[in-house]
Image 1 (cartoon, rainbow, N blue to C red):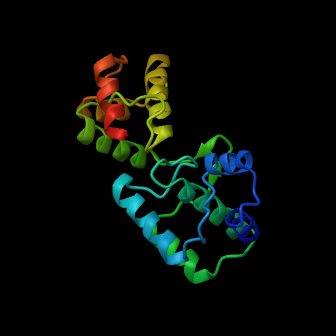
Image 2: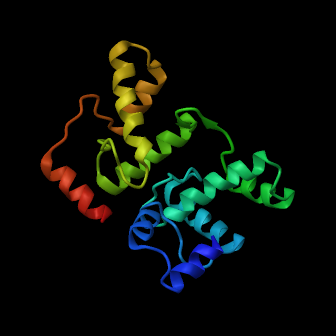
Length: 182
């Protein structure tokens, strides 16, 4: 990677390759230190209540890639125990399901509460940029209730939160939400 950065500096990397790497979130400047990444992760957790950074996290695309690499490096035994303890203390999730991160129910509800505080409703768009899986979770809740497979306690809790069981998506609410994200 350092060689690629050096070649780009000298103008020896073609523009197509640069654009492709940019879309992947490649960082052309020297990699951030462990402390900087931990700071970024801590900031993310303060904002969203968890450490499950999506791979395509718009404000800092590299952070999602870093989180993924941390999981892989731990599996290979390449991370020091003190760093593992620090990540554990942050509430870092090491396990990933085949279809994505396995996020506990309580965390999802907290994410939904945070969304409602910011937007005034629980109608999460399917691809909500700061937390793309939250919209899918909300859609799945509606399906579970319709099939009768959602626990009554969970229905009660969501009702108390003001959850809307029928998706009401108005053009103006979508535009206003997406304009806040940009």
